[in-house]
Image (cartoon, rainbow, N blue to C red; front, top):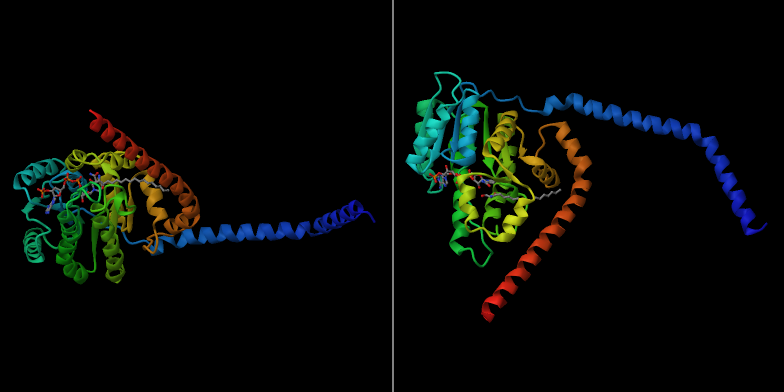
Length: 359
Ligand SMILES: NC(=O)C1=CN([C@@H]2O[C@H](COP(=O)(O)OP(=O)(O)OC[C@H]3O[C@@H](n4cnc5c(N)ncnc54)[C@H](OP(=O)(O)O)[C@@H]3O)[C@@H](O)[C@H]2O)C=CC1
Ligand SMILES: CCCCCCCCCCCCCCCC(=O)[C@@H](N)CO
């Protein structure tokens, strides 16, 4: 038998073998497909069982740190539109009074109250505890705490003053630990409550120019994960929000000195309006979702970096399982483009430096 003939006979043997098996193969495929469909349907059906009961804001007391400006102010307005009582916390009293007026315009009934408290959330626990006590005496126990007070300092690692690293940890991280600590005991006793931390997309990915800022926002995720594990049996739900660049006074301030690289890389994710961010994050916090992503890039980034963070619905878990590999592939392209932005900016800087020298 020539080698061709041998090949032909093996092939025909294989083919005839296959034809005989075909009905079984088809049965198997149908069974596997049916199993997957039933499995997914079952997961969707039990999904509400692991989702927390949504919090109703009507008549609830919401404390918003950083509530006098930008995202925090819009969060306060959004909660007011749902009938909440609000305590705004920030340093500058004038800005607080202005914000109070704006929030009051969103009232849906005439019982609602806006309280203003001036304190620096980063300057020690005792001060923060005493103002939270004052707020609870006036408006009752806190149902939801929104930790939004924060700031950004950008610049390359050598440019940023060494003090800035400490400052940002104090304001962005400790400034969220203190108010949380001040409300948590009462929440545990009442077996209810919501805590929101406003991180940033730069709290999921370390970016050029954010060596001081990113770690202070990453820290919030660690705090939130640990806290959520402790608080779940007490029916307290923690949410971490990851907004992209958002058009606020704080963002305008940041842009005055932000490195070109940081601006170009951040532009990938676009600029949001604070009202838009507030709507998304408040909805997620009320639902008790652990992760609150804003925008399509925010969604991909948070699914990609979900790690061991808790899930609050089966749907969310399934989406993470299915999309992980795809999002990592997309992410590699993003990383490539970020590297090329950094390289281009460096070349341009060196060229303009050389030109300056020649003049
Ligand atoms: N805008 C953006 O592009 C993004 C912002 N974020 C985060 O969202 C949060 C809000 O940002 P944004 O709205 O832009 O900022 P703004 O600067 O517009 O507002 C910041 C608010 O926080 C208050 N605040 C700042 N420091 C302190 C402090 N030490 N103690 C008490 N209150 C303080 C400010 O009032 P006062 O100065 O009077 O104290 C103000 O009410 C920040 O945590 C920021 O990191 C996240 C992603 C994107
Ligand atoms: C599948 C993977 C997708 C990856 C997408 C990556 C997009 C990265 C964009 C990062 C934007 C960072 C904005 C920080 C805003 C901020 O916190 C400051 N403006 C505060 O003032």
